Length: 347
Image (cartoon, rainbow, N blue to C red; front, side, top):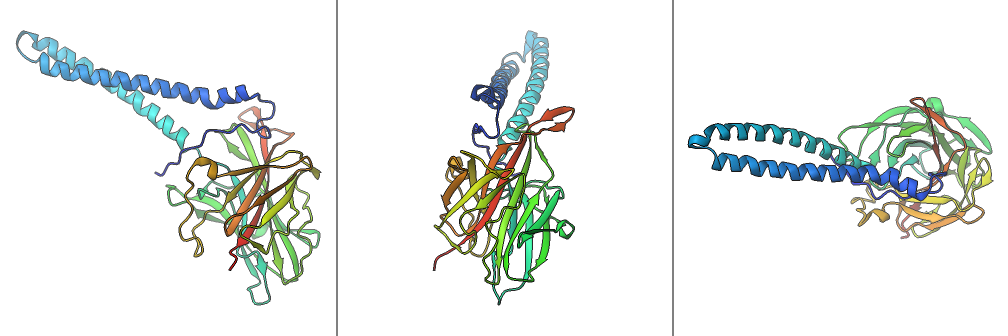
């Protein structure tokens, strides 16, 4: 089973609203530290038990000390088995903690971002919940809504979704994602959007809902790419979100209920999939390279220059003003405004 280590959790005001940094630190680190200390103590005890066990075998095995020898060895075996079980359990817990992954992103990835007269007019669309840079899948239930905004009018496409299975090379099981086909019939901009059902994330003790969008231009008419869909939270592009070269700057505005979000924190990740143009997926040299972070200004406007050709995801995370029930307790909800754009190599 492939495991990836989780970077040190980063305190985010948007997601941890109402929690002081000290409280957040205790929640994220104290239990793990205690487990590490406990496991270390057990490991030390186990080594001491092994030393005592072999001392008994070597020094008390003959003559008048034979009975003492048998008692010593028997007790040593019992104690070692007990401590070994504790150590194995602690190791499993620590491995599970280490396996917790990085930033979550809702994704909508179409087979192309620009449809010309010569192209097929059938789009293949994949809807996933993943860690883009690490390529790790998460289980995704059928979305609450899936549609496309065309000429200012939303069209319901939920019934077009079909379940599929997929996984990263180092994941040991497959996870559900969704696909759909859509037929382009007229020129213009097509903004596809998805609202998933809430995803419970026990590692953060919150629900996650990522409202995700992507825009496809068809047949040369550049009209509608900057229109909001009207989701709970969304990123409205201020840069035309197609026809972009690697190195271009993407600028967007973060909205919640149609209003700008001042100083929003936006996470950015590269969709690190293996393709004919990305034969060798990127290996990040350190955790901060996995997820880029920028801050929006007082009007919720942010910018980022995309250094490589491919798909880039932008996720502005906020705390919802509503909660959901989980096992009889009200839990916070992280709402994410996610937008995907594609860049191309300049040749």
